[in-house]
Length: 174
Image (cartoon, rainbow, N blue to C red; front, side, top):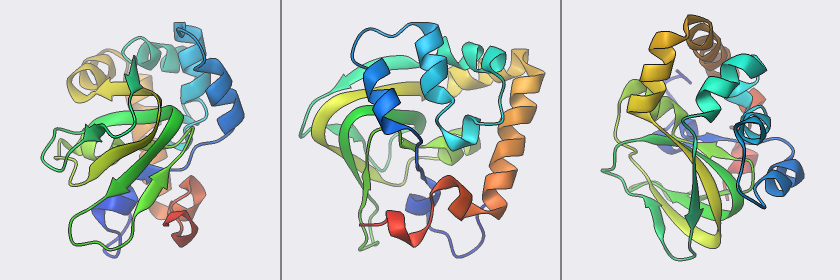
């Protein structure tokens, strides 16, 4: 989707918007409406209406993450993770660059939709919380919500032609 020069670790990472707002919303148990407000900050979901995002919010699971724990490994089934608080280090075997995910950042969208393994490791650096959307639940929702399906794939195709528009520039690699 991002062209031949993109590696799996870079297509896995979407830079989030409004991290302060995301962190504020994550400070307590989240309602579906608050999850919608968080998901709206993810560039890949920006073209999707709030009503459509509500269907995603219902399957977005709030998970605490502890420092030192592994969010996912290279062979794990992909899921979409949006970091609500804390910090996560994203690494891929054979790639020297490491990406640090912060509040509001999302990983796993492309791999989840494609049904791929993650191909990367995500290690929690600072404790916090994530929203997790699993592939099976995502596709169940997409099957029942054609406009949501169209909005998601449209956003992915637009992002694929302009990776810098979704925070995938070299500046995001640390």
